[in-house]
Every structure is written in C-alpha cells, then in structure tokens.
Length: 128
Image (cartoon, rainbow, N blue to C red; front, side, top):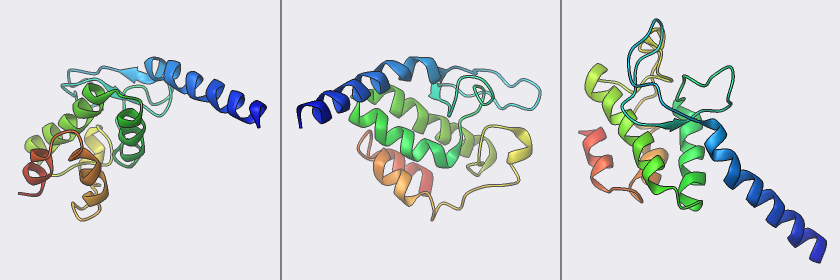
C-alpha cells in the first residue's frame, strides 16, 4: 500500500509540474490560427502548441480546477467566450478553417457546468 501511495504522489507531482510545459499564449491572429486573449493549455508542447481544442479543454479545465489553477481555467473559458463573441460559434479549435466546424452549445453543457465553478455568469453568457 505504501508503494502505491508513493507512486500516486509522484504521479501527481509530475502532473503539477507539467502544466507549465503545455501552457501557451497566442494573442494575435497569425496565418491559420485565431489569436486568443488568454493563456491556455494545449494537448502537447510541439504539434498543437498554438491550439486550444474545444473538447480537450473540458478535461483540461477539470484538471486545472483540481490543481488549484483557477485563473488559467478561467482564462481558457474566457477564450471560448472571445471566440463566441467574434464568430457566433465555438469552433472545435482556434483555427480559421475550424470556424465552419463547431460544437453545438448543447454539447457545451458539460463544459459549461465545470465553467460555473469558475464563474457562474459564463454559462449564461455563452448560451444567450
């Protein structure tokens, strides 16, 4: 049992240190990417470092909230608000060609449920 707990603690420390390696900023539109006003966590640090993905963000925000990184989680939700205000939809990621492929707000209900832990007004703002 002790080795399992120690292993779990090592794993949690690794995850906590890893957030910084996959946190990025892309504030201005550039080529195919849509600029985002706030920092975000990408799925990896190489191939998709300029992308905030819609569906991945749901799980990332849950992890950020559990890790106590509330401001970063809020910034990611605010990025979706920015995209919604700019395009009238939430694209699947912040690339111009993804503006045509969106996630219906009905699918956003799970993500928005997590977002209300950060700021309850965000859910209302996105739905209306």
